Length: 337
Figure 1 (cartoon, rainbow, N blue to C red):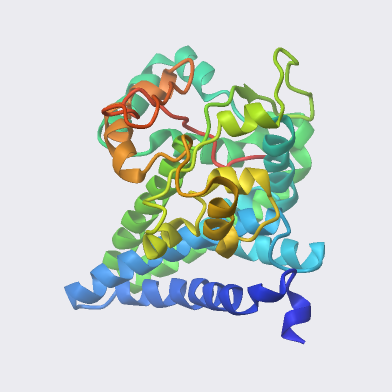
Figure 2 (figure 1 turned 180 degrees about the vertical axis):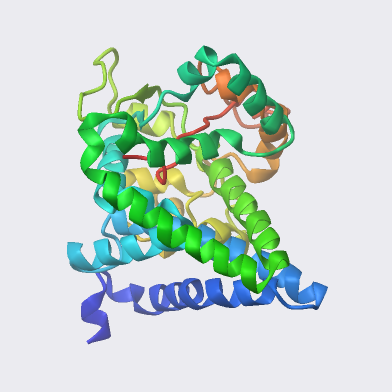
């Protein structure tokens, strides 16, 4: 009976365990945040950060319908996960539609031209750049704010106004109750959320050197180059901790094995390390490790906000090969409408 729920027979155990950890670990982590013991607080921050991260990547899995057999089950669970991590202001169907464009059109089709917005508003630009220098992922919060504001700015999305207001009331009430229970828990939850956003943006930052197109509706991207499967693989990178770093790669639910994911988008998260080795072996020019990317993440944290492209990766064996990889910003699949 359980096997019939899941799309893949071998997914019963890993999916059940990971979903159980996400669903139960999130409230447990919040409880730990409010305890008087500092060690429990640290454990709570780590657990909340992990479960927020997994809830996000499960949304990605549900968008690809890689977990459950039916589209309806994947959508229900996708909506549930969006309430955990706060991406519920956008409809799951909209998140899925925009992400599918990323795969089909082989480009970063984003919702909001944040670069144009920042260039047009000098004070906001200076504030955002200062916050990014301080390692506050301000662009990601601008994108989240835009998702909330869009129904009130664009008549094409006006039917979502009531929904956005309702979601805001529920979430603000929840934040208020958390503050009433423990101000320390509220502050530590905010810290965990910042860490969660950094984990997501680090992965998103270094997985492609695609072109980015801010398109709100279903207008196609310009047909200005050949974007075939060879282009897709050449402009996709696997930003893993290491090919054998089994447990650390699970922080991102194996999302770092991104070339394998793009080659077979419906392959579930737990199969990606094996699939990567089947497709590419132990050596691949597209593998760039987290250790190689940390310097670039730090070095370009301000530059990438207004950069014209994502930079480039040098061939394997080149010293500091990823130093020129500026990376993407504001391309999260959680901030699409």
